[in-house]
Length: 302
Image (cartoon, rainbow, N blue to C red; front, top):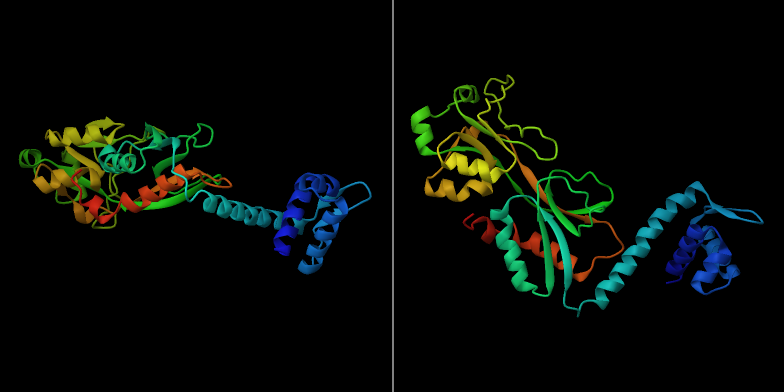
């Protein structure tokens, strides 16, 4: 515990750049802080502060060590908070943002509400890239790789894109046997709301040559609408496997060009990096991770 105390004294001194101010905040004398930091420097074999009669400032080694120490103290604080809250019932408002894939997430959301009735859910369904911190979200669910260093993440599971069409459409227009055949078909495309770009169809060529972009018969920024149009027999759509599972199982849609599709996407939960997670955020993250892509859920009719 002496080492942890020394780390705490060091962090406070580094953040205030004053042994006196650090001592005042910690309830000890400035000399106590200074001696603790000196012992820490002796143990590490490096100088953490440049000292003068009027001020102190971090050395390069001190700046590097400070980031590690902050994480250590944050973990200790989180552990203490977690232990103190083990008997508390998760409650309060939870603001979450989910992609427009209700058939995948709503069974899990309703199950969560039954399990934790004291948690008030404020759900935003959107495919746009929300600013988690600036817009005040507690947790968001998105695809792709996380790029914001201010956020923590947890992988939920993966999905694949599939090309599907109705039996009636394929009977009338023919079944494509290679990606090149799509040039003669009605193709239904998804547009990313955040960028305005069409989502590429992940097709590979049997010859190794580049695959030409399929023609555009319809463009829509919601996959649910494309599913409806495909079910109506008006073209071929590229949709996530969890969206079309039931329709394929009942024969309302048929997969095409499966052997030429090369794709795997990942769903993740993202939340602001902070010193600790409240019980309602922690149980939501754990519940989604344990339930969303569990076997019982992937076999659910979507």
